[in-house]
Image (cartoon, rainbow, N blue to C red; front, side, top):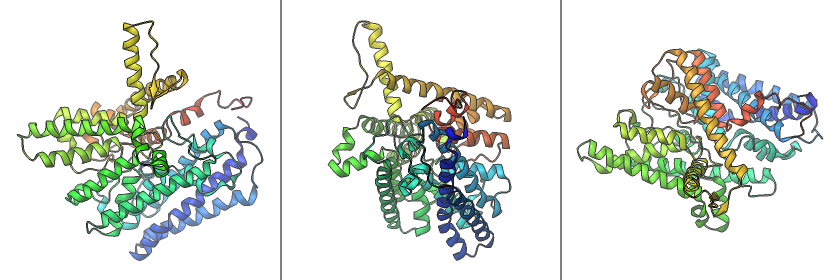
Length: 492
């Protein structure tokens, strides 16, 4: 691809804007470091902020707004580069403060934060400075709605089509455009995102915990990230009210944010008219009940209420790909663990902060299976695939099938690469599935009470790449490795 085709000036201006956003985002942890007298953290944040400002301003000084029309495929490079830049910059405070000793560890933790995965290499998070822990959780909030969507919402002055770029980042096969200008849509969705954040912080404050605790765990809930400031995660509080608030908001954040805008305009019934939302909630209800009842029977018919609460929280945490924990599901009966593993592959809804394959793709995939059986029995029957009473074209169903197949191929490749470390199959498979689906915890050595510190640097970078590829819906990154992408004669 030629320099003109890549829109180098526009790309540099966007990356410069990203660096400026990163600088502003580090002000809250800098103030915490100042208040807590954390000298090493304060110095680290000051250095990174200064560097971001200098490097971020340079493209605006050197280049004016580009008059060239940006192409949709340019969005692939811009978005992929933006997530890489954000992850590298986000890792610097960890490294410069001394909280982490190697770049591989710091990069892994940063990628895990921004992609809202929630995996960690830390064996003891409670010894870290409060400012570093705040930044670690705040990366969830920044990455939850999407880095580029955030920039598009704040800076429509680029003079480019924000929809083309944001489409490369927005999760799910249905974007649900709600306003004519994508920058306006981004602002509206961020208003909902911010409102949801504030409401959860207020509700958690009623429990009596500190505002700091409320904020960091809210960032992890609405961003569906799951990095906690305690080694035993949400189980640290042993408080049913806190667990219930977090569980509900994890589910809310894992649903399509466009539905909330529609609900504000036309009433809450809009949410339940959406077939994906109904399917998502049905899965949560059914699997919660199955796990609770099975665990209750397995444990000798004791504490049914506690079993339902633990089941509801863990189901909400895993299907939303958050990864918070109130109970160690790795010691549950095999049937219950299989139910949890199933949730790894469903994930949240389209246009949500959740990861995974997405509920809408799973729903369409199930409908394709049903249609295949029907056509086998009645070859001449016309059996269209519908979604929310609208017929899906063959292109849409093919894209869903391609995505699911590609997802499984990347999962197997990731598992194979992790196998070079020599750990057991369940550990490698669940680590790859957790990274690609942005879930966080896995099973065995990467279970909910464990961490990823034992992996080699190669394995940590492999997991980091899987996190970014999964967060950007596979093809945004994979397209960059196609020789057709770099053909300057292509027009799209």
